[in-house]
Amino acid sequence: MPGRWFRRSTPPASVPEYCATIVLYQAISKLDALAVISLAVDAPVENAKLGMPRIALADGAWVEVELPKFGEPPPLALDVYSTVSTDQARLQALTLIAALRRQTAWDVRPDFGAHDDD
Image (cartoon, rainbow, N blue to C red):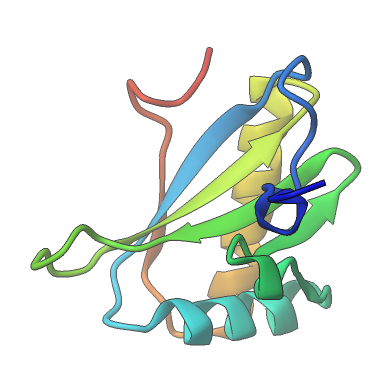
């Protein structure tokens, strides 16, 4: 099937994705951020060769690193997705924040604002 190598490895479109965003106030590359998160949660980076890297957090939850738009300074957005609920996405985001605060000097904060699914 042409193009199958470029498909995003996320749940099918019929499965909802809920999102909770964490803001990372550091000047760091996406690759470095993924490496540090991977170490902090002791989980591998998945789908790196497909161009949509993510790290599994719990059943039905994962984190992706979103880069600022061209010319914008940090912060980076760490989007925590869940196929279960917004509450699970937020819980996993808060758990990730705790792990990152324990294991890094990063300034990370939740941003459960308007663009997060309710």
